[in-house]
Image (cartoon, rainbow, N blue to C red; front, side, top):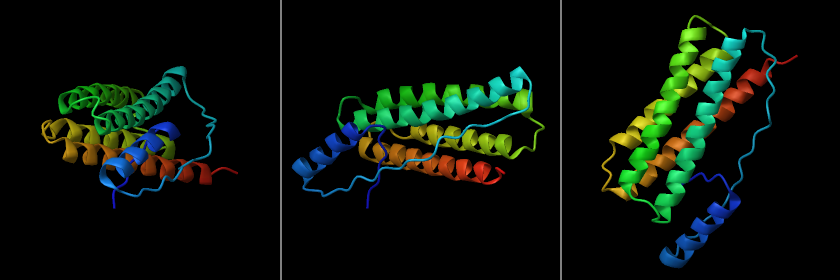
Length: 167
């Protein structure tokens, strides 16, 4: 079984058709949706900005890994381009993580602790992509897909966890 995450239905359909035509592989597309979350936060402007930057960096990492996976699957980019894209996404995640720690490092808030954990997971996964042999693109695309799906599911669990506390 192989799994992949794509940000658009069109990208998923394109890869599905290519797999069927070129390799005879039957596939299934499953849409994963989560409800929008609105957080009511009591914090300073700097704390709110650090949280927002963390969420933005996570979202950007998910979008970038999806783009890299899709482009690599389409053979529109090579492994070296994947490494560059992953390095840029990783720098943004690390910057957001540092800012979060600088402003909210001592916080035990479920929102902060969970976001910190997600940023660490994003950084670790992006590092694994950067460290992969850029010439071995089949393994690289599998690593990207695994990281993206793992991070996405972790984010969904996080959202469910923080929204379960709502009264």
